[in-house]
Amino acid sequence: AHTGATGAGAFRGNQLALAAGAATLAHVREQRLAEHAAALGDRMLTRLRALAGEFACVGDVRGRGLMAGVELVSPDGTAAELAAAVRRECLRRGLIVDVTGPCANVVRLLPPLIVTEEQMSAVLDRLFDAVRAVDRHGRGGPAALRGEHAPR
Image (cartoon, rainbow, N blue to C red; front, side, top):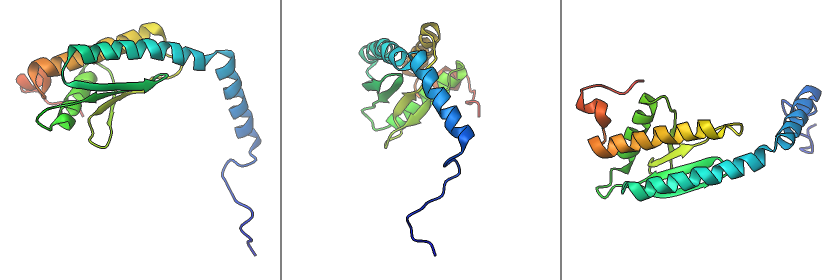
């Protein structure tokens, strides 16, 4: 009879999974990925806060390490549409971002821990361009003015 004192799991006691996990943690320590994420994340947040200073539609910017959220705001209550338009414009520029939050108005950036400074700069340039396009041309972005649809 089952006493409830034991459990089951797909990877519990799996030697290969344990070795892979230990090797991954050793690599993270050796490459100082946590320190890299903290330093590059600080620079990323500084640039994102500049975005908030440039565009009224950017509300709060928050983050930790390389995780960042850019909250979009709209006085007419359509911030979710604004965030969706920014996501479409990012995608047109080759940048995949997520939109999240209880109001679906936060553009989330979550690059890998191994991202380089040059790559992060390119990501932020594309995000700035996308926000600028939506700010200049409305929620549909410049493509909407030409009658184009967002890629699916």
